[in-house]
Structure formats: structure tokens, C-alpha cells
Length: 79
Image 1 (cartoon, rainbow, N blue to C red):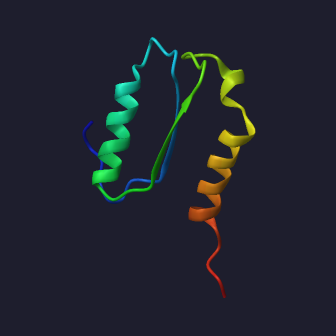
Image 2 (cartoon, rainbow, N blue to C red):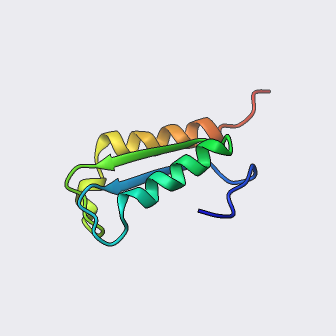
Image 3 (cartoon, rainbow, N blue to C red):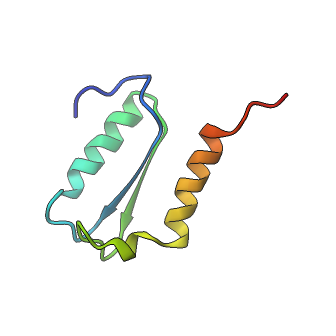
């Protein structure tokens, strides 16, 4: 993983444990690089998720990860 820096946006990575197109270690490497750069990152491994198995990604828990990320980083400043 290259070109990750302090100005990069926060990230939620949803990766299926059955994905044979993009290997899980690539998402883990991205997470680790973000973490080392001090950036906000969450990796959620989705049971049964293949590369294009949309339905398994749209769960309440996964939606909550995205909503929480938006709430944390896009909230209007107080005042």
C-alpha cells in the first residue's frame, strides 16, 4: 500500500471472507497502513461475502459502521 498520508479521509472497509478476487490480506494491509499513519479506519470482515455478493454487506451492523463514521467526521461544529 502506497500514497497514504495524514490528509486521507477516514475509511470503513467491508471485505467478504469468501472474496476470491481481492484477498483479505490486501484489506488488512490497507487497514494497517492507515493505522500506522494515525488515520481512522475500520475493517469489517463480512461472513459469506464474495466479491459481488451485495446482499450480505447490507446489514444493520454494517450500516451502523458507516453512519457512525459520517456522524463522527461530518458533524457540524458546535456554535
